[in-house]
Amino acid sequence: MRILHQIMGRGIVMRIKLIQQVFLYLLLLSLIITLGMRYQPLNNNSAANPPVSTAELNTPVAPAYTPIPIIADVQSPATIQSIEQKPELEEAVTEVPVTEEPIHTYKVTAYYLNVRTQPSAESKIIKVVKQGTALEIVASTDNGWLELKGEGYVHGRYAKLIKEEAEIASAPKNVDVEPKVTIQSFKNAVTQQADIKDADAEPSQPTNIVQSDSGLTEAHIAKILEGTALAGHKLEEAILEIEEEYGINAYFTIAVMKLESGNGKSWIARKKNNLFGLNAIDGDKYNKAFSFKTKGDSVRKFGQLLSKNYVGKGLKTIEKVAKKYCPANSKWSSLVKNIMKRDYRKL
Image (cartoon, rainbow, N blue to C red; front, top):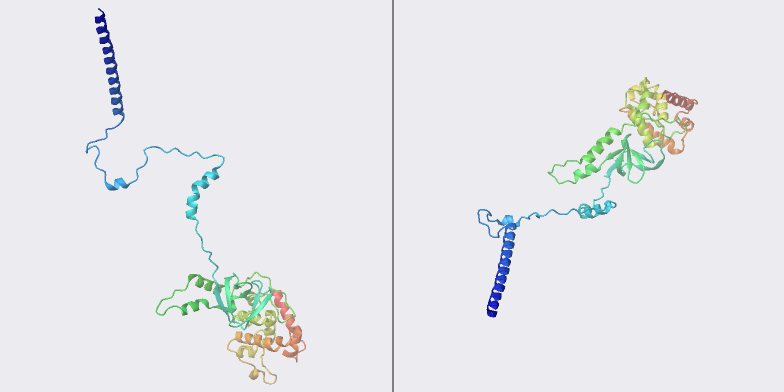
């Protein structure tokens, strides 16, 4: 009996171990099946997965996950922005070359040309430059003045652009040279503006000093000459020219012209274009008087003679000029000044 009990006990133990092993195997099997359902098999057939080309292998593949956005500190957006934009700024920021204003070279055409502090005939004269002097011009004004490099202004009427001519001369032969647009437009602007002054500018009052600024414009002079035989002969330009070249006040020039030519009706004025009685010596005035191609030429000659033989020798007032210009007429100076005053009141 004892032996039987021992045999039966061993059988029960072996059965229990067998059951435990079967349970373990079943557990492992279920685990393997579960994992196999969650993952695709490593080896797919060719129809489901066609061969991958070399180009596709080299093409970057987007990540299968969604990147987690970086949450910036709401209180310091500038910090996040500077961090994100810094690489772009380093690439974008490059050295920008500084371009200077174009400089144009002009040559003085007048015998003497005043350089003034402002673009106005009433401004102070800094210096005087001679004919042929090269000037570096950086800009032009609306009323025809040219701004010099450094300091000062000169009137564009008495300076000629030469830089463009030099560039064309230095170009290779047999090559079509197209002038720079900037230079050409600059030149055209000066040409158009050279004869234009501000018509609204207030002219100066007549003065007893022969060498002074009148402040007159071509429009003013045209109004003064209106209704006389002196109108319509383009004298405005010549009158302002000798004021700029020699400093002869335009009021004075016009007054002497009117007095000596009878407002342009005298025989010498009509036949010889001599508006000032230049060299009209008593006894043979007509034959001795100078002849001029145009009336404007007589104005230019008047300015030249007055500057050299009168103002240049210290005769700077109307009274002093009168004693030498017309010594036979003691009222000459007062007649000239009265004409100047009447002309001023016309404006």
